[in-house]
Length: 188
Image (cartoon, rainbow, N blue to C red; front, side, top):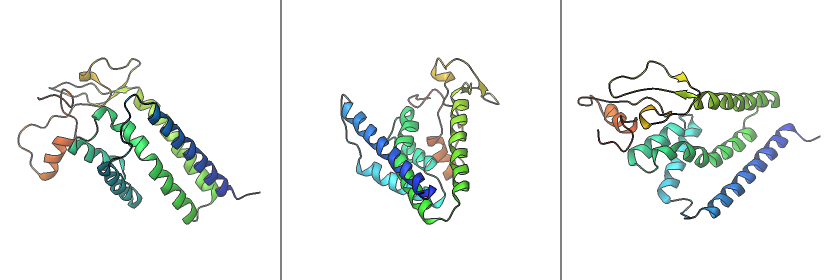
């Protein structure tokens, strides 16, 4: 019987091949095909996924760069992160599963925990809404059964407003990266 790790790697490679084929089919079916990769996006992906390998994470750093340079519309950032970081994550998984000595049972429990946590977490977050306004923000998000109806009551989280002069370099960039009242296209 083959080693369970080999079977896991084979399954991961098969899922990755299916993902790539699906991605190519979706790109070919687009009414206005565009470039799959630009040099800038490739550089950003390489650097942020390198940071991910070091343990810093890729989603926060990529989101920060996208928001600072306005490279991706805010509504498309989650999907862009999931699709754009899928292949580097698979590469990291293949490298670490083969290099790091971990028992198959431990590896299986970790994988099942990650899948279960993301499945449960995504369903909870999809049902949450943080209500906010220009004057105040609710103290906690609450579960709702109906989708948001306006940008002011969206499911993207509370609006954040910085008033006065930013007190530091970090606050200056936070005022650009964090959501703005009225949405990303608002001039307020």
